[in-house]
Amino acid sequence: MKTKKKEISSKPSLTYHLGRACEDCGEPIADQERKTKRHCTSFVDENGIHHNCRRRKHQKKHQLHEDRLLDWAAKQRQTKAKIEEAFAMHGEFVTLQILEAYGIALNNCITISHGYQESSLEFLGYNIIINPFKKSIKLQKHDKPTSNFDGRTIS
Ligand SMILES: [Zn+2]
Image 1 (cartoon, rainbow, N blue to C red):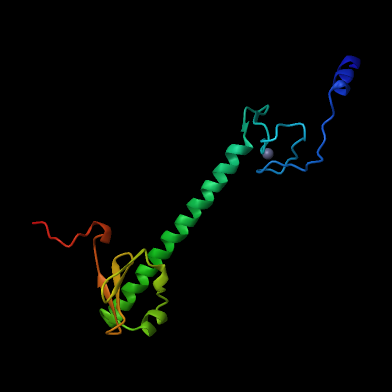
Image 2 (image 1 turned 90 degrees about the horizontal axis):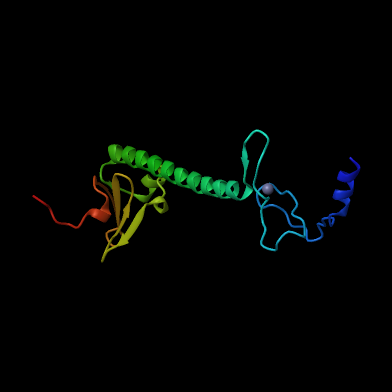
């Protein structure tokens, strides 16, 4: 017991003046640790569970991106359902007021391409073709992704 105590007290004591902390769990990092250290040292606890703050931080970040993608996909599906409703009620030619009434936001489109006179906004299942000269808005059903569509028909 006595020798153990002595051993501990002979170690240089750690300081925390720099205020560094693990980027995942916020555990303070001693000033004596190497400069680039930003996470706790990984360890295996008595239950055999690996604790790795660095890896966990990256997993969280990855999860955040996955969540954003899922939100985006959900928005696309919602918009598709709204366009289908508007199409069923009003046919292919609609107005801005109709789009607004159905809550179809044009800036939720997947891609946008500008032609000579009209712009084509791609949504799931539909393109919305806007012609500012004719002041027309057309809902155009499509089954293929526009990126694969080269205008030719293969037969
Ligand atoms: Zn940590």
